[in-house]
Length: 114
Length: 114
Image 1 (spheres, each protein chain N blue to C red):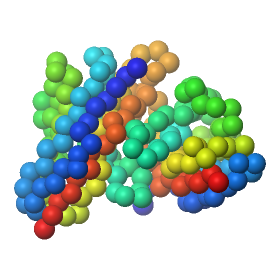
Image 2: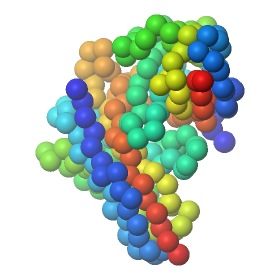
Image 3: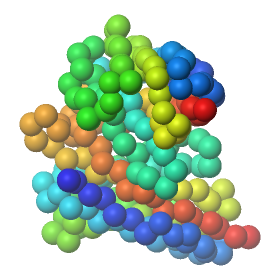
């Protein structure tokens, strides 16, 4: 069973602060990692993808990957109330019939208060 | 608005009804997916189609029957469902079913089984 673990939250931060979202995964051979944002009642929307160890920055978002620790995180700088949503970590594990299969965590609910 | 559309957006059905969910992608992708999202549970992969062939059935009960007539359309036929099947059903597509291919989600169908 391939597992993806996230703190369910809720995580509450003030406007302008840095929000830090964490995710661990069980399959050591996982290759691709994704962060999706899901507003209440809406479908998941891709925020970031990361494939190599290190940091990847896109605007206010930074994804960090450490394959040795089986850990991926998402930092949101200068958090805004519009960032309030559930953030889903997804891990893609390759190999045989499971090629291209995304495994999702339960999501972390983030609230940014003004 | 995403390039993946789903209809209907909401569906209420009795346990003896037969209904179908429709998904259409306008992105020229080759792979399509059905997911189930229940409250407080991670997104669960149900079916994967690649180039119109089913490549995975993730132990889904036979009361759910997928159909992929071409690479742009995906259906989920429902019959004799149970109340515990009430959930958000999400369709997604990706360029191919490779481990680095990003999956893009449709808006989902909120299903209630009475």
